[in-house]
Length: 212
Image (cartoon, rainbow, N blue to C red; front, side, top):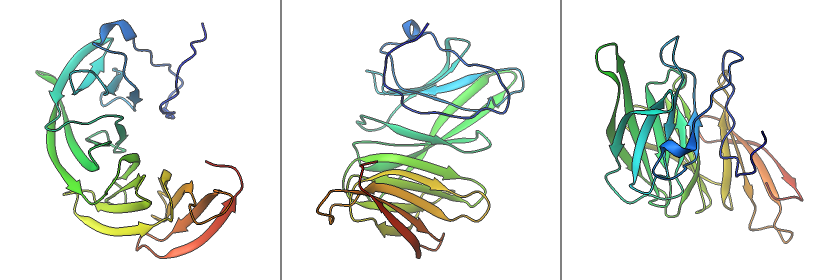
């Protein structure tokens, strides 16, 4: 059956399987980030936006591990590292947080808070992690995209995008970055797509009349 709800994220899996979570098992139905299973025979999802401010790993419709966030966070966005070892989140706190995910046959999945990075002055609304290039990129309502060091969330570069950054992406081949958002300097309040080098140099940009 078709369900009418907000689409929070779309993720391509390596196989053709469909992952389904029963929303009745949570305290409140959150937005889910689904990712490639850490074990070959298991499907796991990280869930957030619960009313108790917890971050959970859900397996087979049951909570396998959970941890409480060390600060108040709402409208959380997240990005999983390609190898499934780390989850990066951000939201209304303006902080970027890193969560370590480990798996063992004896204890199952475990998730722990690794630390946070500060640099944005308004809500974080998009995140992209790239373990291949050892960076995390975040976009914010403050009009900037920030490049962070993957290992310790050290701020490497801040990119002025001229308006709220609603989407970021990292090219796995070159490390080039793409940002998309509203250009507040435009009279038509148009969207602007920008291509940056991994060093923060602006390579190209294009305006669109419709808002991203």
